[in-house]
Length: 248
Image 1 (cartoon, rainbow, N blue to C red):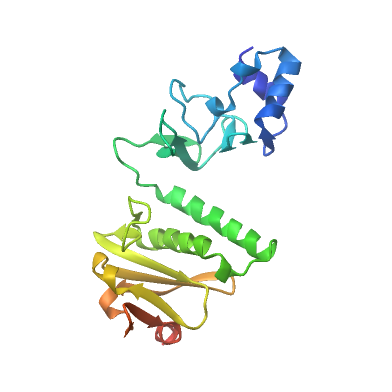
Image 2: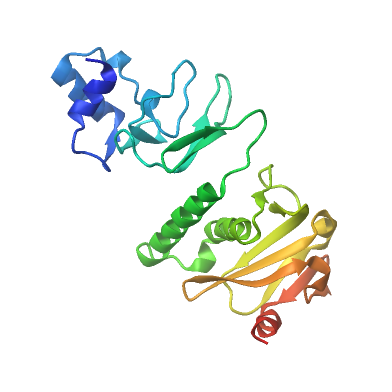
């Protein structure tokens, strides 16, 4: 029996459970007296690609070096595939799954399919709801989450793509050849600020407001058409005026 089959045997009926490497190794060793050094869970991940592995057998979702989620084989998984090359500090995205079908990128391609962006939008939204409703945080304290969800929403609304470079100066999404700066806020009043020094680096503004549990697009269009005023080295966009123009 292969190690792959041994893991399946000891985890039968555990689909959906989060497991540790130590716990799985212990169960396999006790059941089959297998050499624990030969039990490498990352070789059987949907979302992790290891050099020298055929990438044909999948059982887990990699969470971190010691923790995995067991979902079993032939799952209709949707998500990204990461690879950490030898000597690299960070893992890179090399492909993705779409409802159980795998797609590897070629060359420098990193454009995500719409279904992957949709899946991430839903996943991040679930985390946001957990942070707010279970842990008690206010949306205004979760700017990283709301900001990322706003970017995903922009991709879905415009049919565009996330900027190829993380923290790309000036813009977040590219659609129809135009660079879009996404601004997401959970404030109901006040101002959205845009740095004048990076104003020339994008073409359109996509402004999203999170209010009463919903993300609403307040403005999408040419940056010059957004109602704004100069304040120091920034442009300020009045949320109240912007909301009134949307409701008009």
